[in-house]
Image (cartoon, rainbow, N blue to C red; front, side, top):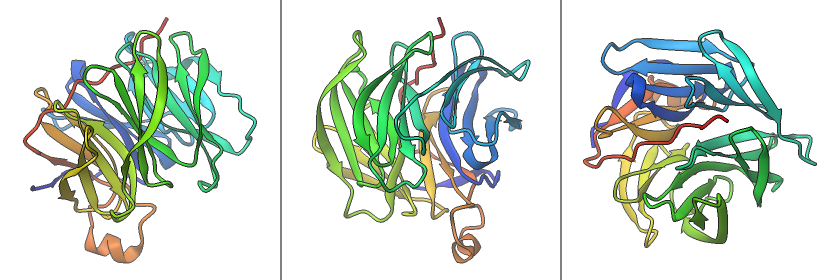
Length: 291
């Protein structure tokens, strides 16, 4: 498949792409720079908003705000006034933990993980954030919990642990917002790099960016079989999501800061936003529902 450079934005660490369908643009974060980035597909307008020193998650809300993950805080942010409207701190026994990847379920609750800043010990956990920013720990332990997705019927939930190189599956109850029966669905040990951010398509297949693996892999969620491997023009693809008005374009974020000079010479668009038409459509993502 022909992966092309959509935007040479040179992110330190582009992460968490979300298709903002009411505004016809892609949103994502540059974690190390603390910026929320956006790119309008028709006008080609690129914008950055500095929200903090670092930011890992930015998702639109039903009230035109953004929900952000900043260090240990969940923040409702007004992008017009550029100010915080509400925030909650995730309190854990592990002071070295920070928030990591997150995504909203079909009822607009945010599921988000924590991990150690050392990225090598199993102190991470998975949380559900409700409309009032109240939160509940749903599972532990994780080392580097990352990409999250649900199948179209919202009966199964998937989450990556990058350091373990595994993708786990739960039985999911949408109405209760509960998970059970955790199992290893896919072991990616034979693939180069580490599984990172991911998304799901209309056929319930997972598309997983492989950090330092130069690929995005597509997996069957019923069998765990590898279906497709896409080579990217960057050594560190970090995450992906489907977008465009017909959800037929797969957008891929990447990192420049965490690569070496030799690789950047080989892949000068590292840190850029890439796109590819994989021949399948995605599923419209959910925004956060504020109370």
